[in-house]
Length: 89
Image (cartoon, rainbow, N blue to C red):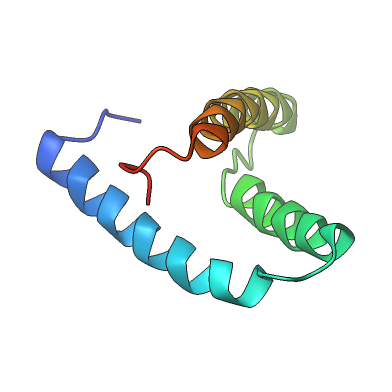
């Protein structure tokens, strides 16, 4: 997978923020178990979209790596959200 150009990265970030705003509205006030279930299912859909049909073992390794990177990103976002970073809003 090639790195995104600066313009593509900015466009992707904008689209992500728009989706987050919509999704946050629906998840706001829900019990943590409901929110966790939604996020787990979304992550499962993301992982399933990454396939290597001819090599299930490498597919599993790839998905494991993707999940690890996702967890690292989540922890970075936890720190940003705890600070109430205005640039994230």
